Image (spheres, rainbow, N blue to C red):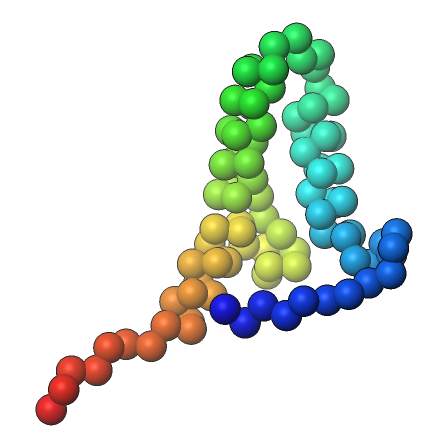
Length: 86
């Protein structure tokens, strides 16, 4: 899969900056905007937010593409067409 494990020291901001930014964005755009009294409403709202984020949220680090579009283009560029036997 081309995944390399990276080791960073404890509390290294470079090690989890992407994750922290994602959580901060979710808090600013969803969680802090209202009071949540029902955990099921919260779960539904988070699911919808994640779906919207992956489909529509443009990222400068991804060339101003949504995560879904970037992943689709990445996978398409890496796929090799099947060759028919001669």
